[in-house]
Length: 593
Image 1: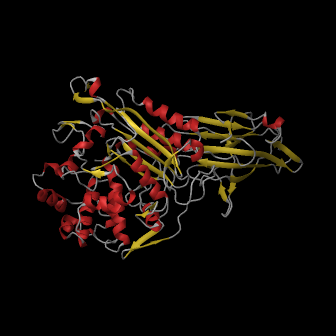
Image 2 (image 1 turned 90 degrees about the vertical axis):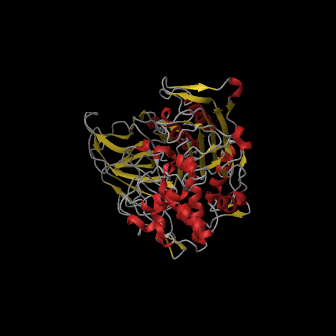
Image 3 (image 1 turned 135 degrees about the vertical axis):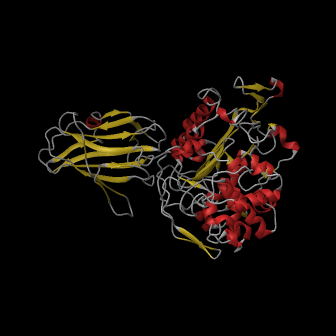
């Protein structure tokens, strides 16, 4: 079941493919990462997790507090109904979990009344509040575990990324699917339609037959279409080549080595009081009449497959997902356990969908998706969401991770739309990662507001002698194309503004020309040196203008060390108190972080 319907017309950035897997062997070219220009987290080389303070994690506590406050707002009408009955929030950096907070209720409603569009609550004494170790139905976040298992088999030479699925499952090759590859399953480019009601088939054999007979809606490799059938098919491949069921593979290859004690398919009945309830599942909004789903998988197809499926069915808690996140950020190792080689992790975080900008995708992992990663989104950020209200985001650039587990289909799926709580949490964690000023103690910061325009203007200067040049340090990270930072100038007191072309440079790279006078998207989250030739005028005013759309934002923009020089001397220097006081900032503010 897809959780992407709210993504709409998003603008996201493309990253070039950097790796291939041939003949079962993994081979990688270097990935463009770039260090984060931020205060370092307190991490070891391969850290394991422990609870600690925001300071120990290298995070700003005020923004972690804001993360919780913003998340609690969605327990109320948002806008008509609560987005979730409750949630568990976990955020960390390096080896430190700096935030682990339950909010709301794990079990609140016993039913849903469709006539009045209200939830029928359990008596107060039977409701169960969220706890740090509440277990959630992960829904499509389960796809990440299936993908990890597949890459493990690639390491062992039993599975080839570019091999045809039909070479492992001959029946799969029917109905025009003979050329679909393993990579296309993992990147949702196989041509499968989004969803098929396998649960309506009476037997397991008939369910398989429906997959074998399913024809692609587009030629393999020609379009991106998120489909549960991809990971269900991958499950069948894994079970065929290993001779083990998917739940056994999960236990033996991932959860046992990593010590994930609260992660499994089909949790036992004894876990039920610690599991967040999901939906009052009844037709027409559900494919099956099951009543309150609590302790069993919510997804209808996964339920019909016995609770064990490649696309859904894994249950877990926030801590276990944090351990998984830390393992991947460590390069596949946690403590003494290694579940993947470092190159394999890099492969999973490599964009294979360069032909489909906006749908960046590694092996199983989604990349650079502002619609739920918010300002944590970078070309290297990886994660996934689940229909039940779950999400996991990893940002290798800042070594940070975020788990948001909500029961947002409790009591019914129609109460929730969009992904606003995930975006809000990600924005707050991104803001909690400090950015050091390029020099001194403060730098000008644009903020991270949506539907906003912020300006940072210098006073009018006399550049009529010619040769005037603006220099400063610049740091930017915006939603690509949708949000733009522009350098512009006016000679008529602000009646009209024109863009000023500039050049940026950073250590180890060739200078980049910006003839449009603007930047957008990803800059590596490092400071760049900027130089701009200013037009000659007696009263030239220069400003930075940062404009965002109504959907999502990046981490924002910073400007530091503004200085204007001409042949006859310095016309403006932010370092001089008299000059600095003449800066006019609307929406920008000095920031020490």
